[in-house]
Length: 500
Image (tube, rainbow, N blue to C red; front, top):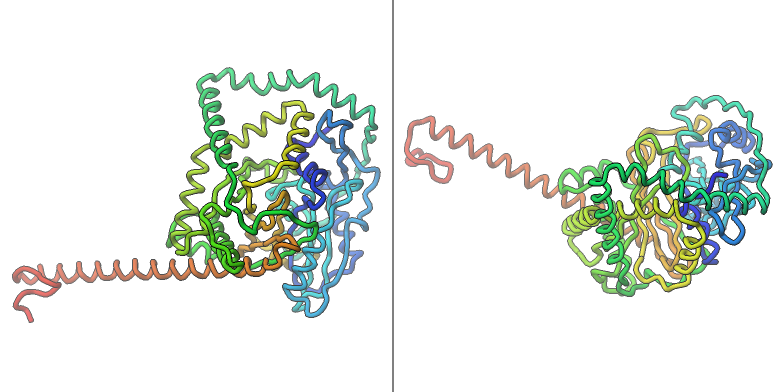
């Protein structure tokens, strides 16, 4: 039996313990028109499903949590059920699309079926259409979910051939089989632990460094769970969601990075910090220095592992500098805090602890997760994910995809979250909000865009001053060389004495 990792299982438990939570992630691809007939779309998906085994599997819980849930083959997969179709009301603009995305993502997925849905959306402005890809977070993380674009979509206008399908479902384990499998895995746990630790014991120096790194990172993570300052961004939530988005050219973000320093992720987080600052001010709240601690996922995937459908992430827990008014100082603060969090060992500690949990009995892990959801969560205020998407355009049934908008779920008193997704020269920000307590998600999306503009203005100003300084230096050098070449007296103020 293939079992879920503890992290993937935790996303299921989040729904079990919190009735307001749906832990599905999504992206919305906006494509050139006209939309294809539904039968063509279903046939296209049928030709790609054999490449994604998870699309034919369901999650089976083990009785009494004696083992992690397992993946089991579904007897059959009704593609017509998984491929939905709807249409936007006029005028079919961003507001209408955002409302539809929020409505689709507010609904929990049916666990009796494979945990994926594709929604064809007609009626977008300009004769365009969209595809909402909805996947449960226990199936994929952001990186592996993005890899599906290379499977379901095409690299060019000509659709690829369907994949031959010879699949036959394996027998589905019953209750006794699930319990027997859990008992067998528990008995083999010491063997698995021994196999995992033996290579480390052969290199005691490296093991010592790793233990020290994990201990240092664990202390940093413990320090990061101190309560954040109270704000309207955290608190009780309902089940319905709101959604907004904004898209900026990736060239603008690179322009900021090249002029002001930092990474693309630093620039994006600085823009989000500016947007959250604008949101708090619009609500009449003072942006406190410790008001917004964000969970920032960090991918642990090695090159070549992007298509493995599971969750391989660690985390950083920095405070976003919403109290800093100057956009350049805000970017510098983000860069410094992310660098310090990474240097403290937070991501490595998260990765090591996750690896340890995978070799531990599942019951105490499940009880720990369950208990955590019944304690007041006071340290996390938002989540900010950044996932690299396809660098080149992709096509669906001969229609080019023009943009891709990401969606991140929110849970456990986190009322607002932001996802970042790059695609074909664009950087998209998707804002998820609680319907009742975050009716102003558009203010956050607009604030992110305005923050990028502020950073661009500062970048152009710095680049201009650098260019003027360089030109002035070169001109001064030429003047000095000219003066020296005349054989005249000393140079003052760039002019030769007595030379007129």
